[in-house]
Length: 240
Image (cartoon, rainbow, N blue to C red; front, side, top):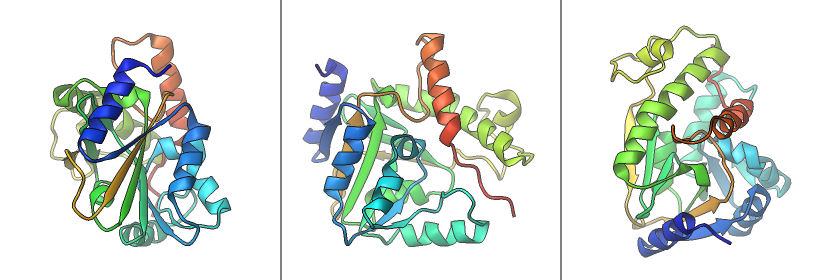
């Protein structure tokens, strides 16, 4: 049985002319993604732990779809930047999303802007996959979670994995201080409130905890499991 908060969100997304799809788990989500992407398509990837957790990118490559993934581990910084540009002009853009409100708004924060830009422009079809842990009550809750919980945690993890000394205040404190550091990641906030005129948006809600998102009131065990799963797949910028 689908939880009410999930079914309410699905209905709200549909009311905004977005295609809302429910998946019981990651395996079912991958099946639905593959059904939406023709074999001769080119697919651009927006950085997403969720996609890697469910094995979506590997499944696309097995389907022999041309994938432009700037976040493939092991590629150079130059190749990373090249693939980001290529991903913007693909037939389909595939990524995750930071939060979905109960009234059907997609809220995202981006450091570079390529991921959020790809969500609503440059493609005939955009597909976003979101775990149940990223569903929130309203915009206030979305912004609070993203800025004060998710972004600092993500920035600190990236710094640790890359070995770089970052100047963003949250790396040292774990808390957002609205800094002006050049390496801050809180640069571009977007809210999708309805279907973009030239892009069909598909939102697949997976009835599992995926990616990086939690509420401070949740049990410590659940939060720890989310963090552990996230750290296995998080991407860090290549060294120069």
